[in-house]
Length: 216
Image (cartoon, rainbow, N blue to C red; front, side, top):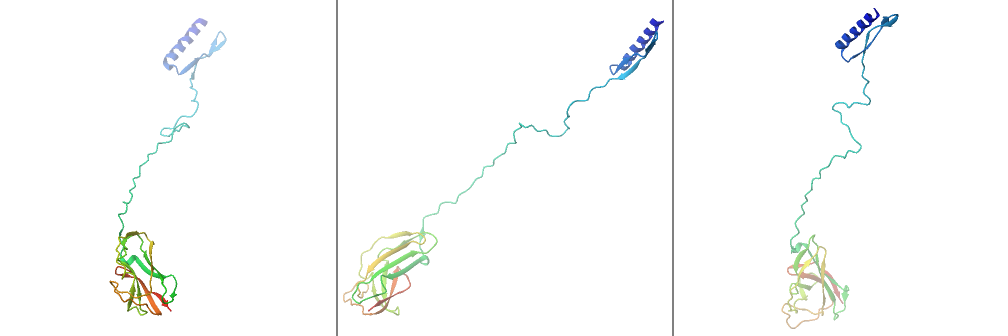
């Protein structure tokens, strides 16, 4: 009897194994010769995975990952073309003036006079300041009578084309003999008497403001 019962139980276990596969683990319960035996199925369990699973679609980063490369776009700059050569100075940018070493002289003295030519414009320019174009004039007090010019008795010509920078000035000195003159320097020059006169600077057809000069 005992052998028959054990054989029956083994038959039942074998059938259960065939039907359940590897998902169950059999255990025997009930009694054989007073010993309790039985058959049950215990669901096999798999241990949960250890650690975190990555979420689909999420980005992961590594401490050793390199930063994304940047693209440098070259910048092309264009410089202005160099300026051309200076142009001729218009009369509007030139300042012409005459100064005397002192405001008055004795008749018979030689007044020391200076002609000033200045570029008052914002850019450099070119001007012919040759000796035949520049002069200092002595005029009557009313500015109507021409008594003397530094160019009347000076026949030498020069070639003085100068480039004047903005604010640059040129100076030319003349020692006047105190006598009258006329174009071509004719004879019969006379001493200018005591009185009040005007000095005027000239460059070609351009003239400057008058400067007073007294003789006594």
